[in-house]
Image 1 (spheres, helix red, strand yellow):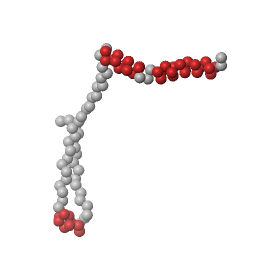
Image 2: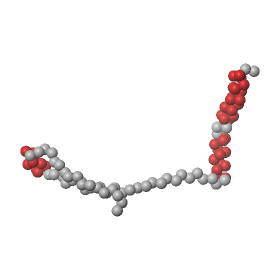
Image 3: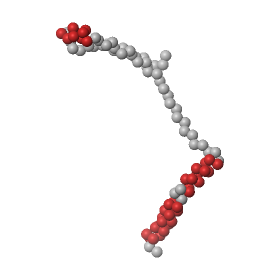
Image 4: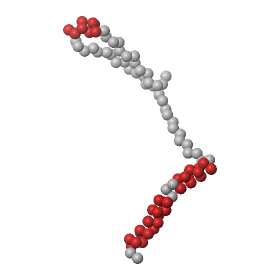
Length: 87
């Protein structure tokens, strides 16, 4: 016997066996789990932190902006520090 024939015979046997059991084996495993009352459980831990947000800056009316066009077309707001630690 050649070396390739020695390798292909067991391989073909295993492939045919897998093809024949493509429905039977998953069904058998599922029924076995149900009979033995084996439950697969997934535990998901979610950690949530509350983020304190600043209030939105006030909306500047259009007539005020028209009056200030001569000074500058940009409006600057001061930033405030936010404490992200739990109180």
